[in-house]
Length: 507
Ligand code: NI
Image 1 (tube, rainbow, N blue to C red):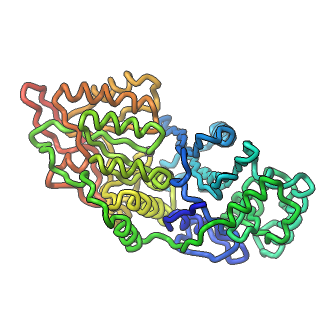
Image 2: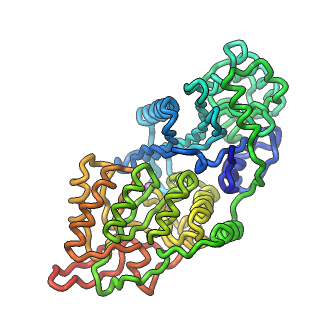
Image 3: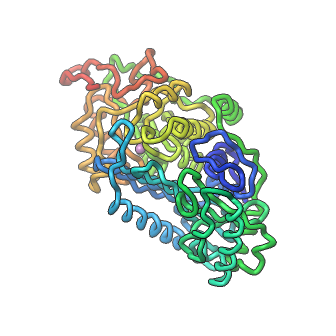
């Protein structure tokens, strides 16, 4: 099946997957590219028909931060159910045990973050690898879980379902233990037991070798990061179930892609290549509306695209309204078609990081990687580099502003929060937005929340009646534009429309 054509997608994994034989390194060691057998290649999700995503978020409570995304395949309901069960169990456990970590600036909050990749996606089998990050008192702790869906048997199995049974699991545990025994200090081979919970993230590399990934701390000191073992294909004969054989066949059919880590230069080059033949996105043309003379508002939609984003674009188009979409890179690679549509229809597509972790909670290298990886994914989808970033949870320190400046990104906050995760009633969302908007406002909404999308026609109708024009964020600033590294929470105050009440933008 098709493999990722974007190198950035592979890059984080290579960074995250160090640990076999060579000096083990944590994810923070950006730039290290091992050529080693535990590297698994991933399928391009945009080629998977009927794929959308489900998002679970909680950034409002103040005490916890949660951002979970997993894929939803229209023709594999059993897979969706299984994934939902896995993330719900993790979320419940997190909610029950989360303790406020000792943040560097005292502001860190417990955080749970789940993103996903497809170790395989063919007409026979689909694999979904969930990457789970949990911010604890000792820092980020990473774990992995891979769920498989057998399209022939129409059922989802956990990774142990790739094996033919208990004796096969015991044999595999023995092989893995033997391999780990040679790893040296820090790795505890005796921790490996024939327990399906330890073997919950299993896949295959392009040679058909079976790759077992362990969670942080499972078989090694946490500082070793991901520990993984590749068992040569020849030694797993007889151990695999029919689903396991299908999964292996899918991995072997993988493409051969160069692996790299995105740099400012490589991003420019890949975006330039993606832009060839595409007309410039209209959304870059600030100043089509004079926000010094007209009441302007910038509606912004974060965390998407999601299942309701197409509907939202229809609603915006019906009113000739433009908006700004802060998308995650992870979603961008799954639905580049929707990003292309945003761009063609005059909206601005902007950076909301790769997987929506609180940037202030990450070491600087990883925070920068969250930005560059999303920059590349979005740039390849729309053919131009984003110029704005909104840090997840609105949380960014000085280091993030510096990284943003380096990538040519202005940092965008908001002055009106629709609090759309809180309401199931679109009318409540619409009321809150309409009551809060002033000329120059930047409104925070989320197109992954259906009530927010359903509130948009009402918001457009009522604010249009008040004389508002709906513009992208840069348009609020007219010819002054936005500057990389600067933070913007609302546009400059605009005079009230004739006959309207005087109002000024809050900052
Ligand atoms: Ni967000």
